[in-house]
Image (cartoon, rainbow, N blue to C red; front, side):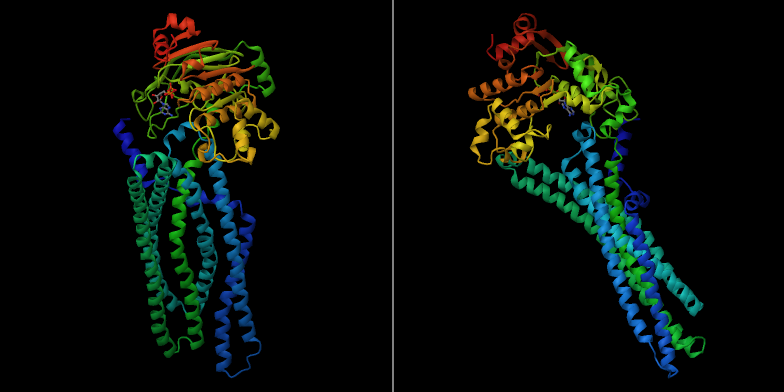
Length: 624
Ligand SMILES: Nc1ncnc2c1ncn2[C@@H]1O[C@H](COP(=O)(O)OP(=O)(O)OP(=O)(O)O)[C@@H](O)[C@H]1O
C-alpha cells in the first residue's frame, strides 16, 4: 500500500474519529445490573402510577357530571401523584449513582490499560490528550444513564401505555396524532448521527486543547525564558477556539431537535382539540374521553420530547466512548508476548539463581532495531523486522538505530556504553528493559532470551535510572519506595546517605516527607539523578542500568555522583551510559558505539590504542 494511501486513510480516520456503538456501552451497564433492575421495576411502577391518573380524572369528570358522590377518588388521585413523584425522585438518584459508577469503572479500565500500553504508544501519543480521555470523556458516559436510559425506559413505558389507552378511547384521533409524531421522529433520527459526529469532533478538540495546555505547562520555564508566553497563550487559545466552535456545531444541530419536539406537541394538541371538539359535538366521543385523551397525549409527547433531548447527550456519550474504547482496545505490552515466544517456566528465585551462576549477566547478539516512525505506521514496533515490508508502509521509512550490536556484560562487573549523541546508547538500555523488542537478534539475561521471560520477572532483576526527569512528583519517601513499597524509613535514609543525599534529608524538617515538586524541580539536576540512583539502590536489583545525566556537573557534584555510582556498583552488574569519560575510565569494560554499531570493546587503555573514535572522545575530554 502506498504511503499516500496510508496517509489518506489515517487522515480520514482522524476526521471521523473512532466510533462507538451503543452495544459497546452494554458491558459498562451490565456491571450495575442489580441496580438497573430495581430502576426497571421502579419505572414500571412509575409509569403505571402516571398512566392511572388520566383514567381517574376521566372517572372523576363522569362522577361529577352524574352528580354522584366523589368517595375516595380525589384522595386516590392525590396519592398517585405523590407516589409517582417519589418513585421518579428515587429512580433519578439511583441512576445518578449508577452513572457515577459507570464513570468510575471506565476511568479505572482506561488508566489500567493506558499504563500497560507498549512504550512505543507513548512515543507518538500526546499526554494531554490521554489525560483528557480519563478526565473529560469518561464524564460524558454518565449522561447515558441519567439523561438517556431513564427517559428511554420510563418514557417508553408511559409512551406505549398512553398509546394503548388512546387507541381504546379514539383510534381516529390517535391516527392523526401519530402522523404528526412520525414526521418529527424521522427528523430527529436523521439529525442524531450528525450530532454524534459533531460531538466526537468536539471531544477530540477538547483532547487537542488539553494536549496543548500540557505542552505549554510542562515546558513553562523554557517558554518563559524564550519570551514565548504570549505565543503559547495564543496557541492554546486557538485550540480552545477549536473546541468552542466544535461545541457550537453540536449546539446548533441539537438546537434543531428542541423545536421539532415543541412543534410536534403543539400541532398534535391543536389537531386533537380541533378534531376532538368536532367529534364531541357529533357525539362520537364524550367530553370525559376527550379530556382523558388530551392528558394521555401529554404523556405520549412528553417522554418523546425528553428522549429527543437525550439524543444529544447519548450521542455525545457515544462519541466519548469511541475515544475511550480506542485506548482500551489497543493491545497491552504483554499482549505481544503471546505472538513472540512461550514464556519460560522460571520462578523469580530460579532466575536470581541463574543470574548468580552465569558469568554473563546481559548479552546482545547481533541486535538490530528501528523505532516506528508515526501512528500511521500501525504495525507493531515490537514484532517487526527491519527487513520486512509492512502492509502499512515501506520500512525504508524507518531509520535503523541499532545495526548488529553484540556485546556481553559480565556478571558483577561494570560495563560502560560510550559514543556520540544519537549512537543508540539509551536504546540499548530500553531493549534490556523490554520497552521495545529487537527487530532482529536476541537480548539475553543469564543466557535466556528475555522475550521468553515474564516482563515483571525480568524487570525485578533490573534497576533502571533514566537520563531525564527520573523523579516523580510527591515526597522523597514516595520516590524511593516506588519499586519497594515496603521499605522502612531507616532503609530509605540509609540509601539517601549512601548517595550523598543526607543533606537533602536534613535541610527540610519534613525529612522523608519533604515534597520534591513536579518532576523533582525542588531538587538540583545532580540531586535528582542521585535520588533516582538511591531508588535503584533501595530495590537492590542484581543488574543496574544507569543512563548518566548529560547535564554538566560541577566538581563536587561529579565527585558525589561517582561515589553514588560506586555505591550502587558494589556487588552487582552495572551497565552505565557515560557522557563524561572520566566516570568510566576505570570500568571493567567499555563498549564504543557509533551510528548503531559497536566499533570497539575493551578497557580504557585498550580502546585508546585500538579505537580511533574512542581516542578522539578521550582527547576531547582531556583524558589522554
Ligand atoms: N522513542 C523514540 N522514537 C523514535 N526515535 C527515537 C526514540 N528514541 C530515540 N530515537 C532515535 O534513535 C536514535 C538513537 O537514540 P538514543 O537515545 O538511543 O541515542 P543515545 O546514544 O543514547 O544519545 P544521547 O547520548 O544523546 O542520549 C536517535 O537518532 C534518536 O533520534
